[in-house]
Amino acid sequence: MGDLTRKTAVELAELMSSGQAGSAEITQAHLDRIAATDEAVHAFLYVDTDGALAQAKAIDERRAAGEQLGPLAGVPLALKDVLTQKDVPTTAGSKILEGWKPPYDATLVARLKAAGIVILGKTNMDEFAMGSSTENSAYGPTRNPWDLTKIPGGSGGGSSASLAAWQAPLAIGTDTGGSIRQPGAVTGTVGVKPTYGGTSRYGLIALASSLDTPGPCARTVLDAALLHEVIAGHDPLDSTSIDQPVPPVVEAARRGSVEGLRIGVVKELGGEGYQSGVEARFREAVELLTKLGAEVTEVSCPHFQYGLPAYYLILPSEASSNLAKFDAMRFGLRVGDDGELSAEEVMAKTREAGFGAEVKRRIMLGTYALSSGYYDAYYGQAQKVRTLIQRDFEKAYEQVDVLVSPSTPTTAFGIGERIDDPLAMYKNDLCTIPSNLAGNAAASFPCGLADEDGLPVGFHVMAPVMKDERLYAVGAALEAALAEQWGGVLMTKAPELEVAGR
Ligand code: GLN
Image 1 (cartoon, rainbow, N blue to C red):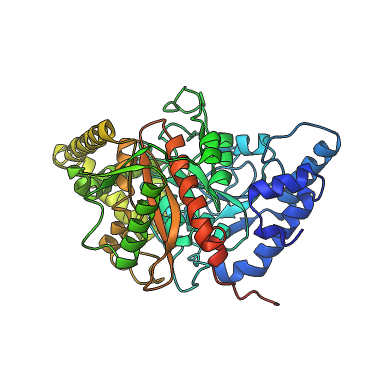
Image 2: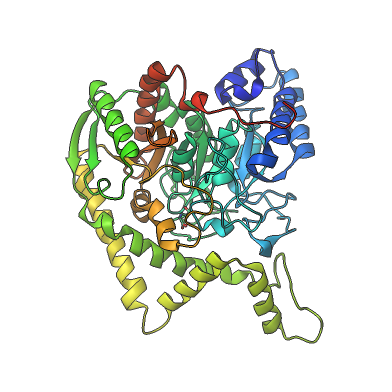
């Protein structure tokens, strides 16, 4: 049967349905792997050993009783710590929520549980999902399993690293400006940002409510599609949830055909500032898709260049308002409550102690951008740019079915390299941000290793609202063609981690 941690979710599901392995055994294998590797990687903030094993046993019992279970029942998963899970510590990577246990499950978590998916624990992330490297976590950085001196991406670096360290076959991320796709790109894994409103935000600790989108992370395209199907769909508890059928993502992933698909290469997302190894792998992937029958053209989206500045006004504005609820009264940390200080003073002391530097920076930026006298000049202007970017997409989609670019301008950089330079950090998001501003579907798929550093490169695909299946069609076609070259998925090329006790 081999090492259970090296299998895909689909393979694990087959082992279970054919009676060759139980969920308890599979879950234990992943918990053992976490125990052996997470001191080095630090993908998890909390490992729910007892909860996961209890869930796994319950699934095994239901299967033994002859119950019909969903396609991913019994498969383990790593959950980003920004989603509430009842009675399990949830911090969003912040000190201000240390020790808080949510009284309810996020809709997404409830759906995972209903599908019989086993939740191994909560993964590390940049504080309140602000960042591209996981270095902004109040609990210390996560390391990239491909090279432990490099960042695993962010904000969802814990989720992507757990996949790349073979600690979990499935993970959940959230993408506000790229936090599923960029971590996927730099760890050689698959990350999908569904259409905004395609997955529920209920129980997701908000960063920027008009952008936040939870989505699936996996090592293969089909695994991601199966997870997508579990978590997507209308939720009356989320006012921006789309009340339409889930796009046929699994079918598209199984078929994996790009025959006749019109692909537009975005002219503005390349060139200066892009690492040569990233551009080389990207071009080869485009050629491969052409050989597989896609019609490739170049498309111009002139306003994408203003995406970054617009995002870094809209996001802090929404974040400053969303984070006002952390007031020392309702959740988590409370500092200075000695009976002498006023409520306002306790609030100020708690926020001073509980928030990290990046969070404070964005609260100040957002408060400034929203203040009277500046509102029109900053927030209002950024919203106009957002509309222009949406129009660029609409025009492009009149000519093509999907748009493509590299997922990130560079491969994983060194831990500590950009932490003191917010602008250099923000530039990670150049390619990913436009889809968040427009609410489009988008994904990153592994497309090879850069020659300079041998690190993974991501292929970025963008599709119109509720056409998420097109992402999977491209991803699956690419994956199948590249598997012939690589002898499997890109992750099989990852170096072995030096594991304690080996
Ligand atoms: N890197 C982006 C930021 O710092 C993305 C955040 C996200 O998608 N959560 O805002």
